[in-house]
Image (cartoon, rainbow, N blue to C red; front, side, top):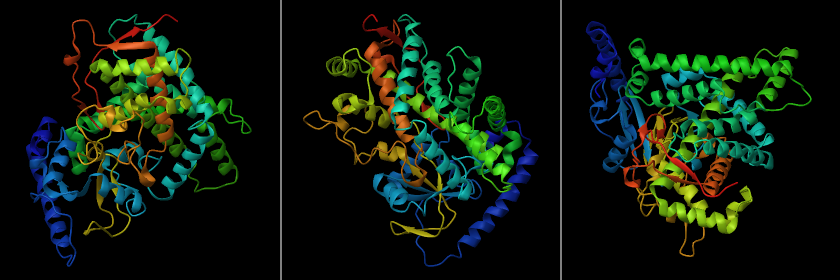
Length: 508
């Protein structure tokens, strides 16, 4: 999709576009002229950009991550690409990404905040902020995620309880075809809600339905071609309908978040906080009483941080689990092995986290589905905090850097069959589970996912519990070969819309 096509599809006038393009062209040429004065440094190579348009003529914005992987084959593990006037350094492959994100975590430690994510967060919260605000919010989130269950027995108990509700929800379909998206997202979001708000929603609650659907829609629209163009050319905002839709969704979600938090305020006990939101309210109250005027514990950080936890904690984990069930229906021979290991090791009792060490095949399947699903192929964009040399190339301070997680998870140097679903990637010849350094679905370094341990626990427990009770098959008249594994591309990669049958393996 070209820039002109994208803009005209939004109904913009030719005169307005031409004038704006002319102004941007002048700015672009001035920028190129200024940067060309840097002498004696070796910059990452890359395709020659066109004036203003950069490399848009060779990029498929509907599948950006694929275009970038193809360019890496030509230009190497570190190269430069121009998204319009924006220069971005791309990192591809396990070795170079580990070197940047782990060995040079401080130098590559800032978040690159594009216009759409600035619209989302305005510099507040955890996901898309920098500096002291990010440091304080991340410290707060990590400490309280641990206190309220992440990686602990309480977290396991919350997930196990929710897995029972999810199993009952699946049973209601009586083995008939159904869409897994909403019930799976409800289960995962309820785990987040229990930790953040100390409560859960019934699966029939339409308010939570709307929150989930808005979150999923925003993830999809954020990766759309028109929003990518908006990130390159912020002046196109009046013509980008998807940007307006995203912002309206966010406003409605923040309004519902405020409703929940206002309810918590009425019963708040400073001596006995029940969840992360209440801990934030208590800290906010203390800072206000002490007269602190520059506190990070303000209402904007409260709403956006809680929304970050809800959105990030729901979408990626629920999407990974949906891929898992689809893959079981696609590969019944693997599902049979999963069932056999569950029956042999666990039987009909409730699966526990400690069972993982005795379930090497299931552990391998869970890891492989995360690798294969490749839910966040572009990773999270970084920005250099100083001038830095990497792999012999010079990268300026403030440069946008994209570590392609897909290039690690599908790296042919790290995986025997990178484009196939193969649990054997995580098994040795004796059938024992083996860890792989290149397994980095949650990224790495100081900007890695703060909820990683919780997500891992959820994926294992939900997956194992559902496979204990159900056999997942395609709908009647649909063969396993008909099940499509081509992802729907947004900010994350989702399975194409599909239905599955959850057939009970035994009576309760």
